[in-house]
Length: 137
Length: 182
Length: 144
Image 1 (cartoon, helix red, strand yellow):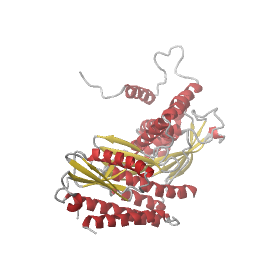
Image 2: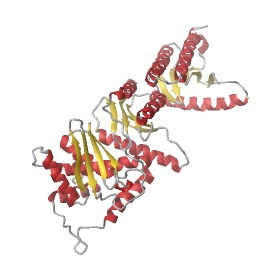
Image 3: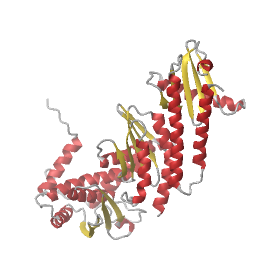
Image 4: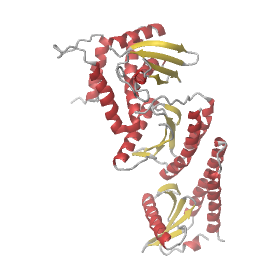
């Protein structure tokens, strides 16, 4: 089991870059929440249009991503880059960043999946760089 | 027919918490064996059932589940301790210490309380989860971290992030849990 | 160069600018990523604008843009929108395999003509623009 000592203090002002990235993701049509979740399932950053139980969603996102990654390993897939959950009302997309942190997006049904997925794929390398430099300091 | 909206696990959880709240630790249907179990059985449940087995299924999601489970217990314990104390932190901590001792979770000792900085550190000596476990590579008491987080969250009514920074299983002799108030 | 070609050329330019922004060395992660985001946004907005314009052209039945077979921009809800995505991905993959063995170079266009309708797929940067219309419509002419 991995360590839970990786800690990114969400109160630090340097995290405004991450907030700016989340704000940008929220501007995509149909996206209703964008969150960073740490390895313990704690939501370190979040932008949303509606009330969310952040403790529950954080843990659930980690659990779903972890289970999907394990399922992928069982069928010989090595690295899980994204997990997409589709429901009647929309999608939840989660993508790994660094050190167990995940980026999760919640969308309404009218979101264009290709648009959201494209933006997510293009955003992850930037977040990886930011997290690598933050966690190294 | 009345529809019962609670799952069987939720029904059992309610009965267990009611038992804890009542402070009555005797238990029915255990006339010969009594209410206590060997610590290794608890550790098997914690580190195997809620540890390596969960990790087999959930991978990196396992610590989140364990932390979240501990937090649920901490929230329930917090509600027990917060009753009729008029928001007095010292009394609250005293009740939590007593509850943790009664349940043999560990000996809880506040190490640092800096409310201005929004940081608390609590030691859990003789931690039930990792006592007698050695040579791990990282702290393993995610359940206790979640529990302490839930206890602090209940009192302050604020989101918290609890992180285990020292662990007996790492050779630290105690478990130290840092709680950041958000 | 007719109207649609010039629109595609504009999109190509924006796609290239976005790729160049991505390739810049990130000494200053924040500013570089902001610039990349801006270029990406300009490209996607232009794709959406083109899709919105194409659907208004008489004779065009549907128009959408896809990334990896998933909808990235669409003009209006169409019941076949997901099916288009599946066809786009299948067709591009088959064309890329064939294109490689025949040394065609990067695939730029694929047109599938059925007895009733036809479908044109055009590659622009990382996306595929997809236009469908009745078989008898001359797309080159209506898009000019």
